[in-house]
Amino acid sequence: MGALTSDRPKSMVEIKGKPFLEYQLVHLREGGIKDIVLCLGYAGGQIQEYFGDGSEYGVNLEYSYEHNQLGTAGALKNAERLLDDTFFTIYGDSYLFLDFAEILSFFKSRNRLALMTVYRNDNRFDRSNTMIEGDTVTRYSKNGATEDMVYIDYGVNLFRKEVLEMIPANRFYALEDLFLRLIEKNELLTFEARDRFYEIGSVQGLRDFESYIKEKA
Image (cartoon, rainbow, N blue to C red; front, side):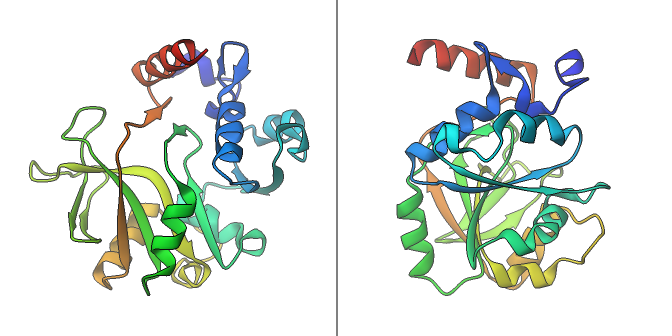
């Protein structure tokens, strides 16, 4: 993303005069998600200064800061005291279309520790990296995906808080490593999304999202 993120977090990149995170928060609120913890790292103070307690956007915001790089799973461990017994996660550069209540109901009907949403991507929007069988994730590889993987992790996950016991405190721990441990234990459910995702982790992704916002207006 180059100059666009040289002085700000990725989620503060502006699209039509608003930071990307504002679109996310409004979208989450419309989906019934109002209590949100933001895990912040680089230049995270900009986000808290801009959004405050979230009331202006119809949500309740709390903040968890990491003072050294912890990775995504490590950031969850760092935010442990702020998280409910069951909680969703979403990446800060993703805009997704899901029925959160439906996913939560499905998750509660199964006795598993975690759930990954997936999308049949066939390498269209990014490199596919996930294999499923029935309602379970059986293989996952963020960077070493193989040709027989047709799904991609969609960007929303659901966890029982006890999963945090598997994450070491105060050290870097990647979400991929947590997924692999859950797969090994047969504890990672899957829920298939039907609509494409948007992300601003690349220039093309940013352009696609800008086009979506313009069409929606």
